Image: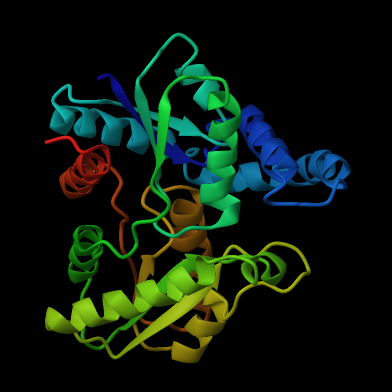
Length: 304
């Protein structure tokens, strides 16, 4: 049996042209903006935001999401030992599902979003894209909806936090926020809060005790109400004590970690007089993450 696994993510920008494509496609997504007005809003936002946002991307040398993801795929393929083939597809930029499978046929395909928590704006949106392409294909489709509660995955997070452990510091789990209008119909917030509970317990069991553990949200955009508290609010409430930040929503570094958390919020922390701001790296192409994904794949596809 020929099996394929597709790692799914949003994409990113390596050039200003690619950023335009990303913004246009994201704001055309009905899971992001349900109203038909998105066909007007998308080109308008793209026009107004591209120059400003690209300046931020230039500070980090463009998105590294493709490089990290390709390295991860290469490692997983080693673990796969030809039992299955691994690819990656992006939702808003290339390569997309259609690009990958244009000349390929598989008996079974597993969709593996690299989002630990389920959300209609990420996981379901990626599934939408895949469902359209595979609608008339013969391949059997399997899906992984979330993995935040998998102990093996959480061990990779504990390891990253340990590298920056300081008993005098406050640990902040920073999650990507969502507009309340979406979050109230979504399981995302429930998953995020449950994940913080799981990790807090796992840290305690490992003898890791911070001065405090907090949940905060980042990446708010526009005037509508979003999930709170914001990371800025939490940083202000902790100042001037040291903080350790873990990016809870991400497994691959992208502009939200490389720019937003490592530059933008670091500057905000400095303005509040925070004495130490340490940012944990997410899994990227680590051996532990590749091994976890391989084990998860084998469980779902029943490969021994």
